[in-house]
Length: 216
Image (cartoon, rainbow, N blue to C red; front, side, top):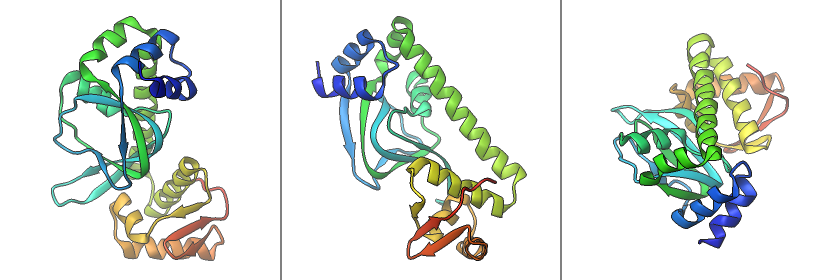
């Protein structure tokens, strides 16, 4: 049994029953990723699913011309729902995932997925809850694209960053935001300047300070 995994699961995945924690500590492995490392890429087959225990992961789509579109973040204590789906069904990934800061994950072999689902109710409900929460996030993204103007999408995006990072100071560039929202840097710069004039934010070099609660 891997005692480090056992302790991490006990501390961060309290919904897991003790027997499940013991099993995952036996079959799981820990993998570390540096900032900028890819955790998954389009067309990749999975050998395991991932439980994120430290750091922050950005999930995004990439088109044939390498244009990116932000989908959602995966934070410590959460799992990648798409890796669960692709791993259990032996499907290739349709998304990319990148570590935004040094990240640590517990890898669970795909050949164990069916047995875990059948044997442990806490794993079964954890997988269902992971699917549900990620589906809700996808709906939020779809709503933003379908029903919101770019200025509202930007406010929604920055608000999500604040909630995820638990900080009013966001380290990013205008180009990175434009890439995530699939628009031009000029458009983002113009909208951010308007927000600054309204005292909603304050712009710094490669940082944005959010001065009020943002709702789109």
